[in-house]
Length: 222
Image (cartoon, rainbow, N blue to C red; front, side, top):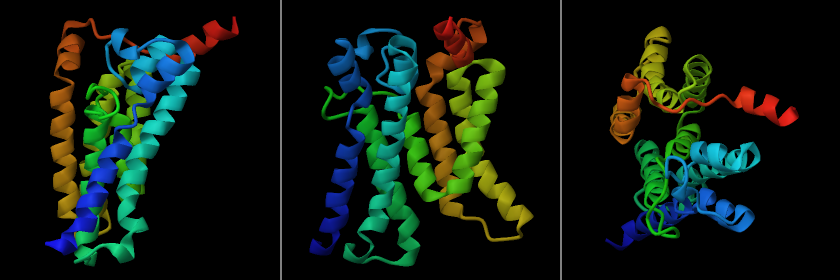
């Protein structure tokens, strides 16, 4: 049992990394307000963009991405220190540490367990696990956002891109697909759909908030 302690400790560390509430702390210390009391009530970059502006939104987004990337990368950093480490367990460890950070973002210990939806932290984790599939997710998100102006829809379809990319690339390259990552991708997609149920309902009703960063930039220039 002792040999599992490093993995347990790193999972806890990953959770606390994810618990860093960038949106809450930046809002409180630089703007004197709690973003969770405004807009959508989410402690995420989208609500920060709407509530505090582009500079704060970019800062929060980068920090949230870094949380997921760093947490998943703990498997690489402590490669030689992990007991019972095998090459086959490597993706699972990255997934475990990354998901611990996502849970930390959603239920942050440093912010009364009231966080965001974890999309940026999830993307950061995916970047650490599979760069090209994650890049495909990001491209899908941007395209959907530009066309629809719905961040929520971009997040949902962007997440779905991850397992689809792995399946399609495996077929094209005639390689054995990574079943663990594909199953993980579809599970994450279902979780994202569940956490965005209200957004989906608002999209269907036509009253979901739209975001246009280009328009905001033009307004600032004028």
